[in-house]
Structures are given as structure tokens and as C-alpha cells.
Amino acid sequence: MPGQCATITLTRSSTVAAGVYAPGHLGELTQVIPFELVDAVLEETGRTQQRLRALPSRVGVYYMLALALFPDHGYQGVWRQLTAALGNLPLPQVSTTALRHLRRRLTPAPLKLLFETLAGPLAQPTTPGVRYRHLRTVAFDGCSSIKTPDSERARGWLGKIRYRLAWAGYPTLMLMALVETGTRGLLGACLGPSSAGETSYAKRLLPLLGRDHLLLIDRGFDSNTFLAEAAATGAQFLARCKSTRRPPLLRALSDGSYLSRFGELTVRVIEADIVCVLADGTHVGGRYRLATTLLDPVADPAERLTRIYAERWEIESAFFALRSTLMAGRVLRSGDRFGIEQELWAALALYQALRTVMVDAVESHPGIDPDRAGFITALQAARTQVILAAGIAPEHPQPVGTIGAAVLDNLLPARRLRISARKVKSPISRYHTFKGQARPQAGTPVTAIEITIHDRTSTPLAPPSTVPPSTEENNGHEIMESSPTDGTSEEHDSADPGGRMTLALAVLASRPGEPWHARDVARILGVTNINSFRVQMSQWAHRGVIHKTGPATYTLAC
Image 1: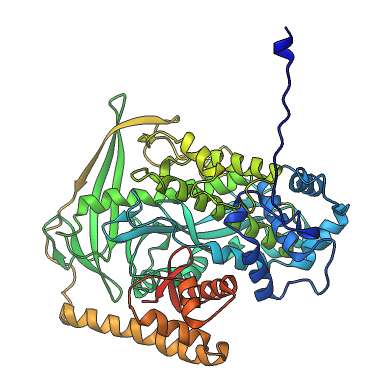
Image 2: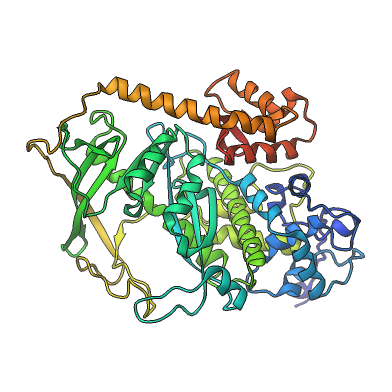
């Protein structure tokens, strides 16, 4: 029928940067990573082009982010995604060689600084599932499954891992990340060869911790030295101990836990049996020993702390979203250290931008747990917005854009309790056979979790400390507060000749403990380039001079 053959013409407009800067965008995610921020990062790292080229440095930053967004496309394919909706503009014809040279000219530094600027806690204090009491739950862990090409330069830097049955097929990279467990956003990250060990990388992230953090620690980091360094940051920790550790009992507490000493650090130890009751009636569980700096059994009952420790596993979901979803489990493109670092910092910055949009979306509807925001949904919507060149610089920005609306329209169901055997489908994996108690091979629903706290009321194995607790705590705070101040005073003189850092610290000190946004500090100091100042404050936070409490929000360091 004629009515069924009718057609309609639809037109749409896009606002992009002018001239050769037009391909430099990331669709709607450009609102999270605006042009001004990228320009400030390039200026800070000295990578702004000396002359205007057909491929400016700003375009290079967005191109690297687009490479991470489209891992299954080649160089030319990613360029076509960026320019698909810009056909009417007189854009230059670029070759694969030109794009490769653009990467080499850019270096990894701007992408690393961009990630560090975006990194930080994302959720508001009232967001569900983000805090335990007044403490924001965070965790760190290492991911050593990111594969690089089997090139001579990659092997020379990373080496190869010897597994139980054979050598690994590809050199692998160690990525250590500090994650906000409630949102799976990244507070910081570092990377390098796996041979250096997880603890050495984790120590680099300790300056990012503060008094408002509860650090959930895996048993691979339970050394006395490391736990003491973590406690010295002012953060509280809840750590799982190795089965070989036998902590002395100093004093039994009312909830079945007891005080002990790890070196010079006083901790509270919780020993508990955790049993999962499965849908078929079987019981699966084991003995756990946790150590924490939360010493009050009334304010922090042992069973409650035991249950909150399960939040540590959210970092595994964060790594899965990064490694298997965003990067599609592929081998990295670059075969040398220069390109590997650049590629991975770009992926981390893109991941953090996506998490920022997801958290903003769920927080627009109070009461929604960030766990229900689907990463795949946000990723697919972001790719579509890049191809359409949509939402780059809207005249009237919306609190929740197209990506956020897609997340809200496709919320995941509430988290289900399930359990399965820990294994990796690889014949050379150390988890090829599970050596612990037998668990179901497939995911099985859990109907209940039973926690039994073991009460140690035997004679103490070591005498209690002769120093009164109040004196110990005061001495510890004096050391913690005086050392960083002494250590940074010389740094201020040499690295801050203009006194901007000193003036900014004075502004933060005018209202101690209250968060300050970078733009407010910049306004008081008379700084006109707010994005450049935001980058500077991010660098101070990574040096431990100040503490990042939210997106571009800071307080004085502990």
C-alpha cells in the first residue's frame, strides 16, 4: 500500500571543535574529559605541538582513548569511527603511519596524568553500598593477566612467567589498582613487570589513603611491615591473614575477638567459620582469620566486620570489566614499553570516565545501589555516541545524558548470592585444580551464610604492652603527623617556587576536614586556568600532600 512506502527525512546536528581539532572527541564522554582538561594535561607534560599540524596533540589524546574504546578495530578503523559523522568537514586524509607517529610524539605522560586527574572516589557519602559506617570501603589487588605481544622488546621489559606445566605464551603485565568497592571506580593504579611482586606496587598506592577509608586487604599483603605502613596513612584496615600466622592473644573481647600485636602494631583479630548453605542443602565453607585496626567490639562487632570483608571481591569485578569487557580479553597492540604504558593508561582513563557517568546516573535516583549499573550497557552506549559524534559540547548539558539514560533503563537486578569453584579454563593455570574444600563447578545459589565467631579465652600467649593505650595512640599520631610535614617542607621549597602549593594548603587549612573543590580554591587564589590547576591538585594528591575525596575535591592530608 502507498502508506506503507512513505519515507521521512531526519536531520541532526553535532557540535565539534573547529578545523583540524574536529576528530578530537569522545562523543558524550567528552563532557567528562573536556577539551580544556586535555589541553591542560598536554601543557603540564610539555606535549603540546610546537606548530599546528594536521593531527594536533589534542586529537592524539582522544584517538588513544578511542583505541581503548574500539579494541577490535585497527588504526584506520578507529579513525573512521571518530570521523563517521563528520563527513561534511574538510578533514585531512591520514595514513596508518601518520597515526603511529602521532602516538610516538604524544608519549605515555599525558595519558598517565589524565588518568591520575580523573581517578578518585566517585560516590557521594549517602550512596548505598559505598561506606561502612563513616568509612569508605576501598581495596587493592593486582591483575597479572594483561597480555602483551610476544616481541623482543616486550620480553626484555616484562619477561615471561613460568607456570606449573609450561612457560606462558605471552609476556604479561602487572596492574595494581586501588578501587572504591562500592562503585568499582579507581582511586589510583600503577603498572610494571610481574616479577617485582604485588606488595612493592601496592606500597606506591598507600599515599592515596586517608582517615575516611577502610582498606580491605587480601592475605597476600599481611606482612607486619606492610600493615604498619597502611595504618600509618591514617586509614583503618581489615585484612585477611594467612593460615600460617599464629597471632598472640593479649586480651579477649566481648564479641569473641581478641587483641594482638603484629610487630609494633596493635590489632584486633577475628577468627570465624563462614559456611554457605546452598540451595540443594549442602554446606560449603572454611575458617577465616581477619585482623583490623578497628579495636572497639561494641562499635564494630566481629560478625559485621566479617560480612563487610566480602566487599573486597568487588575489585575482581572491576578487573573483569576492564580486562574482559573493555579490552575484550585481547593482547595489547603495542610491542614495546613505550606503547604498552601509553595504551594501558588510556584504557584506565576511559574506564574511569565510564564509571563516572554510571555513578552520576544512579545517584540521580536516590536509593539505587551502583552495583545495578551495567558496564556493558554504558560501554555500548558510549561507542554509539562516538560514532554519531553526539553530545560532545551540548548547549544545555543534562544531568543524565544518553549514556546515563541507557544505564537507568537497563538496571541489573539486585545482587544474587552464588558460589562456585575457583578455577581458570587454562591447562597451565595454578587454579587448574582446586585444592581446598570441594565447591560446585557451576554457579549455585546460596540460601544463607552462617558465621560462627571463635572465642579464645585461653591464657594470653604474650604479655600486654606496658605502655598505656592512650600514650601509644598519641605517639603514633605524632609520628604520623610530623613526618609528612617535615618531609614535604623541602619539597615545597624546590617543587613549588611560586608558592601556589603553599597558598592552596593555607586555603584548605582554613576549614580543616572540609572538602574543597578545585575551582573554589582556584577562585580564591586568582587562578584563571581552572583545568590546569585541577591537574596540579591531582599531582599533589598523588604525592600525598593533600587527600582526594571526590571528583576534583580535596582536603588536607592526614
